[in-house]
Image (tube, rainbow, N blue to C red; front, side, top):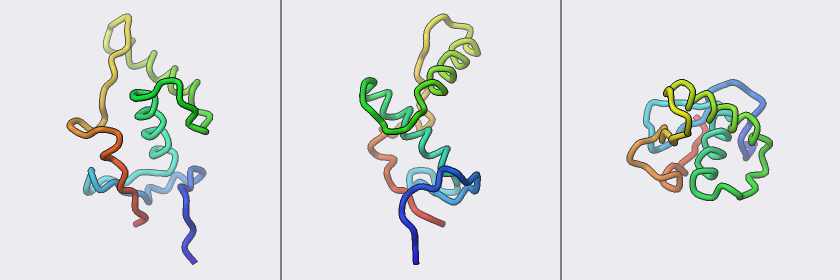
Length: 91
């Protein structure tokens, strides 16, 4: 029997995105991508994931790394919107 949903507790990279052939992701990595993408298009939305504090910390680290006082969103999937990256499949 095949289980549905994303296994965020496992570090196994068993998920693929159709938009990124050859790349594999863990469940937690996918959840982080979804959280960051939703924050970009709808900052006040409730994602249902407790990732707000780590996301804010990542934004601060990113801005420090760029030597800027503000945060500039770096799209991990250039040329694609968050809604185009929806093809998740189990390998």
